[in-house]
Image (cartoon, rainbow, N blue to C red; front, side, top):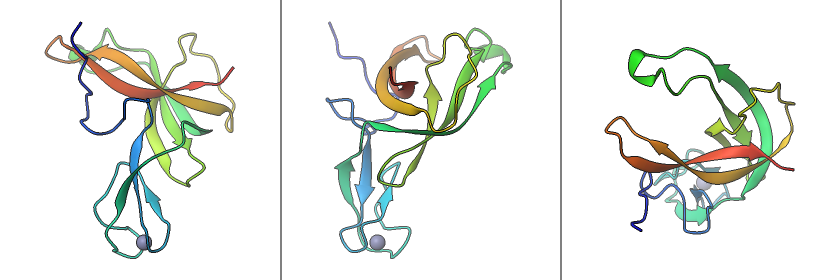
Length: 129
Ligand SMILES: [Zn+2]
């Protein structure tokens, strides 16, 4: 079976780790990966990020444009990783349950259908346990 391509190339590795960047000079991390450090402008290096973090904030999207109406409702939010980066992400929450800020979350690959009807792989976070 053909490998399902990533929606955003280079954003996740084979082990389902998000790829960000780290500054070798001041240890600042960034996600998505950046070429230059937002703190000191030094050149950054690509690095795999922690797979677990904490729910920082979220919201449930209940309405969308006509071409997206079969996708709603869904949950989006931000997850803070131990490296200090805050990742914008979809959140697995099929029951649309209220979530507790600070809940431990884990990244996972998730297959969705893009606007051309093709399968693509995105990352999303799901509550641990
Ligand atoms: Zn730096």
